[in-house]
Image (tube, rainbow, N blue to C red; front, side, top):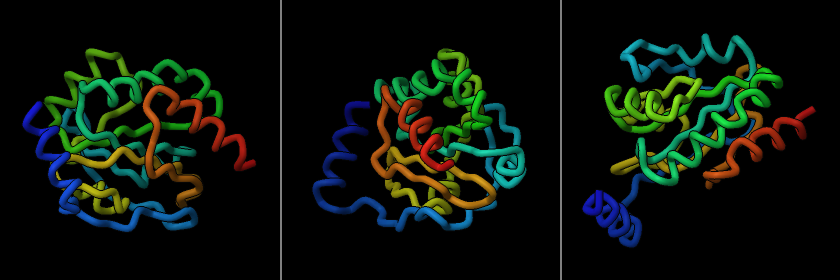
Amino acid sequence: MKNTLLAMSLLSILGLTAKADPLAVGAPAPKISAPDQDGKIVNFADVYAKGPTLVYFYPKADTPGCTKQGCSLRDSWADLQAKGIQVLGVSTDKPESQKKFKDKFTFPFPLIADHEKKVAEAFGVPTMIVAARQSFLIKDGKVVWNMLKASTATHAADVLKAYSELR
């Protein structure tokens, strides 16, 4: 872990992280598929069709900031559900790591294992070793809000506030 953080810091300092243009508000939501924590393929278009969807990216399962972010969403699950907001958490971890993370913190939403970084690429989320912490709210097949430096402990409150301002 220490070596990973050191490498990420060095790459950031040197400007060697992968550059991408994140999806802007109004952009069509990517219709992509990827495995969840159980290895089951999740078709994002099918999820979007069920209602507003938060797709949030986090760097690494079971690390302090990522845990705070996931727990914020978990702890506000009733409020998110009351608004009809579904959640997909995405990191470049493998399904096994996602499963352990989901089970350890009893997250009520799927964690997508984007080990090949295809989901991050489709959303324009920068990656090199791990995905950047970014979030996208999808409604009616389009990005209606994004947070390109997503919060950790207040993530659910940020999402709920943004959603309430859409109406």
